[in-house]
Length: 516
Ligand SMILES: COc1cc(-c2[o+]c3cc(O)cc([O-])c3cc2O[C@@H]2O[C@H](CO)[C@H](O)[C@H](O)[C@H]2O)cc(OC)c1O
Ligand SMILES: O=c1ccn([C@@H]2O[C@H](COP(=O)(O)OP(=O)(O)O)[C@@H](O)[C@H]2O)c(=O)[nH]1
Image 1 (tube, rainbow, N blue to C red):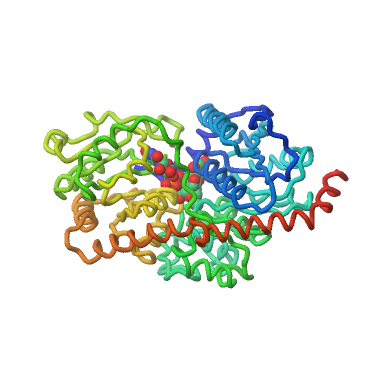
Image 2: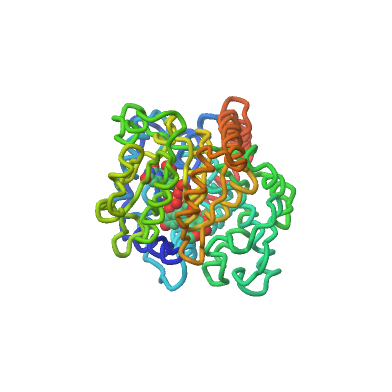
């Protein structure tokens, strides 16, 4: 089972290795004369690929010719991640988009005495001189800088260079609203949020039970302080680009725009989602997808728990197995092995060792247990999948909604309890499931059985509503990214704004860079 604080730390310990370099990869023959938008992602796959895909959409929507320059920060680079970035760079070089990857030098790691998010913030801050030097030395005029939401310290660099800076938010608008609310909430609540009884008020959301707050917000430590810091600094950005769909989170987006979350209106928020990174076509069909192809429509419940989940202690594995067996439904269960010491990422599972005796034999005609990484997007695209038991990572949620698959939320870490709350209590696209956060997010077998039955058509009103709402969400998501849809319009507005700022502020920025 994922231990939330330990997990956050492990992510960092695993990810940070010293790697230096300043190679650049770009499309052959590309000249960088057009203005460039500089992306500064948090270099873990979920953040990097999402920002890159959003950037490509920006190029596609832009009225003026623009290129992208990705500043690759080796701060979060494991050798594996590094090679993934190189693959990505190679693929992009062939994609025809005008994209350049610029590797920043490694910096000395700060001490790790506090939590993961505070560490990330300070580490990004240490990159300031390199980011500034890289931007100042670019051969193309810089139109704008786009920062990861953990990287708001770099707003200082953008200000010094007189460049418009945007924040790219890879999670839900509800989490954004909470972060914008934090500076005021911090003053209102004297002690730790975990001691708050009842609910936390976030405009645009129903009262959020305090027990569902993201883990780093529970205790007022430096880690918590980093979230308050980002929440405050979001207000300085030229705009916040959010991977969400206006029609999925209308109330919370309105509250942000009208200044009911922060102390001032935050009008330049651009919901441009869903930004989903699809792999290039042509790869061989995965075994899981082949198995699904042989199942009836909407008959299989998928259980998959994100990049860091899927490994559970044996009482939980037994409870899942019992719950699935008793539900009587078809299932595809991505069961992973425990992460190696110091890593947050699960290993391939030894299913014979992990599963209760006889379980596979008894369920072989209707169940598929897969011990490794799966192509989750392809699986959710299968007509056979009728429900998704998910850890509620925001990317997984968007992928599920894109395919109209209703969910049963099993949040594990980060902001996922808040996401789960929104799915059930606001969007209505999920059936609630009781997850005992105090017992390491334990779910009892009978509770899983109940949720799966409800989700998959056991006659419950909640399940029927979730299926109906998920189908509606699918239509909303697809419409949003079509020409003239809300996300398309939002992206065009952003592109126009960047072009307009560039033409009016270009001279000022060029002056600021030259004088450095
Ligand atoms: C949004 O609030 C939180 C996010 C995170 C968090 O931290 C993190 C750290 C890493 O070193 C690597 C990561 O991949 C990672 C991811 C992450 O959040 C997830 O990001 C996804 C986008 O890639 C998506 O938005 C998911 O919903 C997030 O859960 C950690 C955290 O507290 C520990 C947060 O409160
Ligand atoms: O076995 C897996 C586990 C995860 N994913 C993908 O990894 C991403 C997970 O991102 P999310 O925001 O849901 O959660 P996180 O892993 O950041 O907690 C999503 O795109 C999933 O489709 C996948 O393809 N196969």
